[in-house]
Image (cartoon, rainbow, N blue to C red; front, side, top):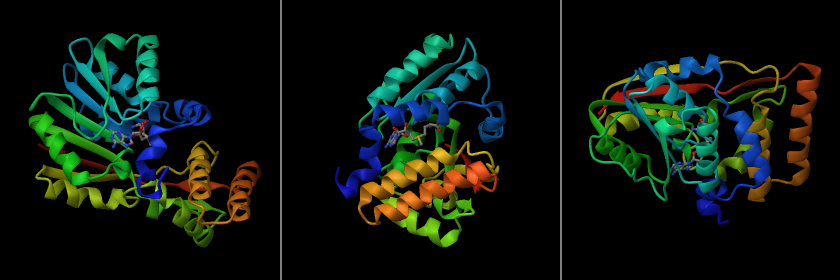
Length: 263
Ligand SMILES: C[S@@+](CC[C@H](N)C(=O)[O-])C[C@H]1O[C@@H](n2cnc3c(N)ncnc32)[C@H](O)[C@@H]1O
């Protein structure tokens, strides 16, 4: 994998162990409802889950749009699409979701055909956010709503690791993100793309149990892959995160920007 396109390639070529981890990491939990609230999902809508992964959010969306609604789950990874279809069938909503594997950001959908596009933790990986937003506006009905949920990796807090060590790991791991500070940029990018009534909210729930620690272990894998940091530094980071979880001194906060706008 070349460094220049690693931000995309690491999603195309995923080892089975990491895929298994994502099934758990992306599981829909009722406390995540706050992330979705600004999208105003209602029965009967047609909704896109852009970058759907193994389909957990798409399944929740299918429950919310109900029998009269429809969900399109879209992703660049074929394995995720296959798993998502199986997961949706197992949850009894397979008939209300169509999953699409795409190569670039083009949506296999008609102009002005969808009510909502939800894009959760994906935009930091796309080639060109402006072009992706243009494509979203094409597919949204007039007055339809884009709801982007995304991190800002510059706001990540991991204690007791501290700012300097985290910055060192992230500097090496940053090849895995095209736009790592996407969270703070979403408002301006949506305004520039012509979305109306753009609104911003933030959710920043702390993790003290280690539930979100897999994002740090993935970051460690990206840092190792980069070759820009020595192995011992990455090993010590992973060991110290694990030790802090065991000692109950660990705290992770990764604020999520929730940004909505009308097409
Ligand atoms: C961090 S995961 C988020 C998955 C899901 N949205 C969630 O929050 O549970 C990022 C997802 O975006 C997908 N992805 C990465 N680049 C993409 C692109 N350019 N277009 C569409 N999906 C992409 C990946 O394959 C992966 O499923």
